[in-house]
Amino acid sequence: MPEKQHIVILGAGFGGLRAALSLSKKIRKGKLNAEISLIDRNAYHTYTPTLYEAATTSKETANYLQIKEIVTFPIEEIIKKTGINFIEDEVEKLDLVGGDIHCAGGRKLNFDYLVLALGSEPHHFGIQGLREHALNLKTFLDAIKIRDRIWELAESGQQTFRIIVGGGGSTGVELAGEIQGWLCELKEEFHECATKVTIVEAAPTILAGFPEKIVEAARKRIGDLGVEVLVSEAIAKADAEKITLQSGREMRYDILVWTGGVKASSLMGSLPLKMEKRGRVEVVSAMECLPQSPDLKLYGKIYGIGDAVCFYDPASGKPIPGVARAAISQADIVVNNIVNDLKGGKKHRQYKPFAYPYIIPIGGKWAIAKIGPLIISGFLGWILKGLVEINYLLSIMPLGKALRIWLKGLRIFIQNDRLG
Image (cartoon, rainbow, N blue to C red):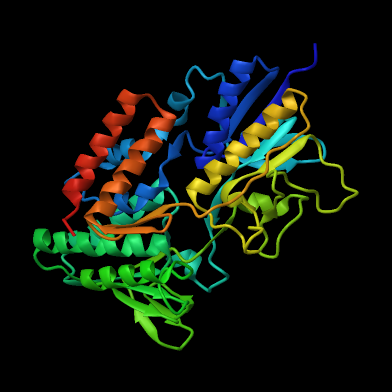
């Protein structure tokens, strides 16, 4: 009997978790001679679209553990009875020629198939002082740090505090809108809390690259909330009290949050794989990674999905956006191709990007949703956001648990929101 094939998936984000769960089902159903190991530095999977809400939930509404329960989900519980071997560890080194994975905890694994789903990390673009002085919003702990810092300022009795959000993409706009709404509530609670939230964006508009109707609706909403927006202004440097813009203007702050860019996991940059011009690993349409040079022989088959890699849209020639829906679609392609290999087939499915639907919540019970040509904004957009969340939870956990977590999150976040 042939030796059992070892499939290793690095990263339990949207794409990595989808690949692991789907592969386990197909391997068991087809009685294929393979095993799966899933490696992540955290013991939980994070539903990142709710991080902006976690960062703006009052301590009076929910404590740390209550928020963690509705934003993060234990991986061991998700993969129970699937046969997936979960390893909570950080990958320290990848030997793609020898087929070995070295973890920080001293563990060493070999692989026959490797799926790189390591996600992204904040990109500070070498801006002086930004890494040291800005808070990020990439992880659950990042969200809690932002929440605690805002709460500390409110409790201190400081009458005025200024929050600057660097970056006017979807994350920055979502966070700024929600913070502004929360600060209004804090003002009522602490009585002497005059606040100001400012988005600083280097592009000529917030949500650069989005359709003009989306940008216009977001611009109006963010203005109605009282958020100040500075466009065509890039941060040149930051210190503990102020930022300096490239125009020379200085802006003092009490809290600085950076949402202005992400890059592939630093581990990816050290791999002997073909890279695109911005330093991400480039993949072909079967989501397979290629060696740096044609004469380099890689071990096994190596796939990449999500923010860890770059895929150029054949139609536009541009990299596709790093969104959850894309990572999940790419994971499905990788699963199909690995299973086909295990069955002895030669034909691989090709990934074809499309205009993924998306939702951008901006303060309270208000969101912009784009589904195909249809654009929905306001309370109905917020309702659609909730439906997307419950649909995702149902894809990774049993019905009863998914409903319990979703309803608990709904109760907490509704208490924390106002009607738009």
